[in-house]
Length: 77
Image (cartoon, rainbow, N blue to C red; front, side, top):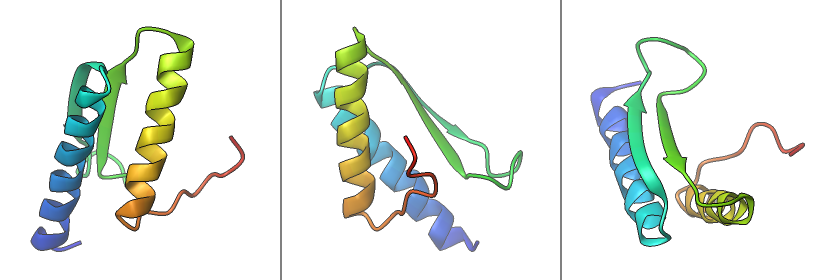
């Protein structure tokens, strides 16, 4: 991955965190793990008020990532 691709991923993570913040997500953290694991580049970690709230945030996250062209690898859950 080149520097431009990495910057795009970081920007998308920031945009996602702003979206989730607008949906009342709590304790939003963005972790760059690209040097630690080959599985992913960034984790966006948030807290929710309830199970239903967490599922709603998951739906918003999936829709956001799909709109940005990211593909889900594990579709079983």
